[in-house]
Image (cartoon, rainbow, N blue to C red; front, side):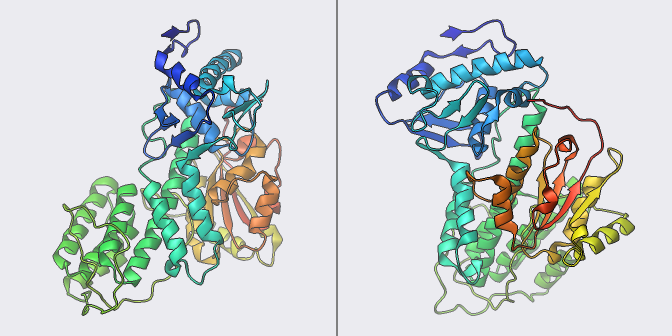
Length: 480
């Protein structure tokens, strides 16, 4: 074993096997496999990599996800060791990077070998090399979803090509992004991870929602129940998935199971949030109890089930039962954070914001709205509620973008692109956004912008409505 001394967070024990991975990779084409859904897994040529600390894992994960740009060493030191003096943080980063490069075999390949090294380094910057042979489950997941957005079809729910890609994507979602990674004393990293977790959760839930809608439209109620159950596993409080599961059970002839599930959800809401279900869900429950949602006669041409059957412990609707259902409307596109408590008051502010946003088509001055106020006065919550009320006004989507974890203004455009689900590009991020949004009617909610205001980034020129939430409270500054 090799032991390093003299640095806080750097008393690292490195098993001898960790060094062997790099040696074995020399002389052959190495392949790095990274899986971040449900935890952190990394292997080189199918051999699991042994990392000394979770911060080494965190560094690799951050660089792999944010691979569209080079990152200064100062910003990475502040990301993971914000409570250290700057020089100590940079020294710690340097040693962790040295161990990481050895683990990946990069020292044997050369620091700037763009065809082999996984980490491209200069004296000032670090960047994950996307050209090096690797697989990343997050990238595969988002690429599959992006392909469904660019594919030409009449309706997503009826496009066999896109539905197949959605099924592949949801199979990759094994759990929360970096769910088991414990990174202590790294608030900025934790904020970044939380934003990524919420973004990926919403993408997975939206994909499962489309698959459940398709299953209902094709009268595959077993598949519908499976996709609804998976949504509930990801977001236990989301009402839409519970509504889908209740309908699937009722349409499959399992009315009692649907009623029992409704009761379980009511108790969950009461215990967790102290609230009851919506009027619409109560109405659905009453219709199911009254026998108004029932399966029709089996159709001769019913399609095969498009999803694996639910677990045996859950009520399993059969895919052969069919029913006449109302047309399914396309799901709204948004990633607004779920709120655990009801929103009360602020009617005047909500009305004013809605009026300005709805006038943006004719009044370009209304395309940029800034909410200001004391810290803790509820600006973020007000912005989210206003955006939620305007979902119907923005057919191309409403997107919440947290900027809390950003350090430099030039990170704003890539953060917006990531929230929109745009694939990483080597082009100018602002130009990429302008190209993607020029013909769209989109609302952006930018949260925690104030620490980046020293260098305005021209967000009001993106060609879409923008709701900027400016929290006026002191925050740490990380100078690079």
